[in-house]
Length: 231
Image (cartoon, rainbow, N blue to C red; front, side, top):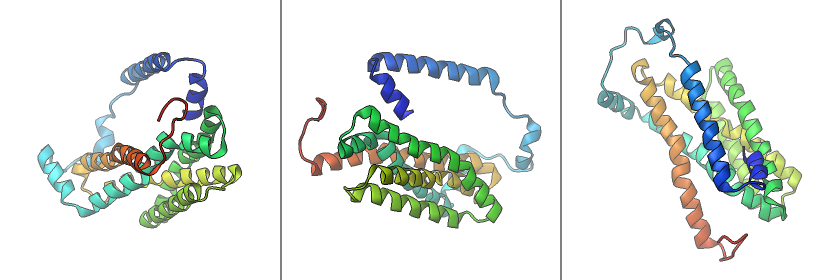
């Protein structure tokens, strides 16, 4: 939504945009409440025969599995940079790198988010087909490292190459979805929901911690200057 939102904000104020987006969110929430139904019990056969445990016991079970925490850090590290680059600093970085407008810079987001959306089910299918998850996770991590290094380290990267690196980065970042499949594989059925929540917490903390951390680093290392009236 970065590119459409940037174009939209060129004609309306932030206040009006937030009001209108809140209405869209309210309609979406109401639609989910009215349309989406709880799965019938017959679809939950995989948990039959398992012992119901308390929330405390569930956290103890999940927390005692060291592999869950490795997946937590994987999710943290593979998705955190997404929130930093594509979710926060990427548009300004591209804008200043090529001397283009905010709307033009935001168009680059299509080259990241569309491949991410398309590659997510492909990664899932591939891991099921190969019956291997760890190698695919390693490949996605290496792809992300390669793409982000090329985008950030090389100042003379062309627009065409930047678009290609964003496509590779989007495909790589979609590998985070595999961690949810793995966390389900390595935990008991009775604690799968808790384990998935812990893994998702890693995804969320990636943005919560890395965004202000990178902002602080930029303030510390970068020169003091005002761009569009903002420091």
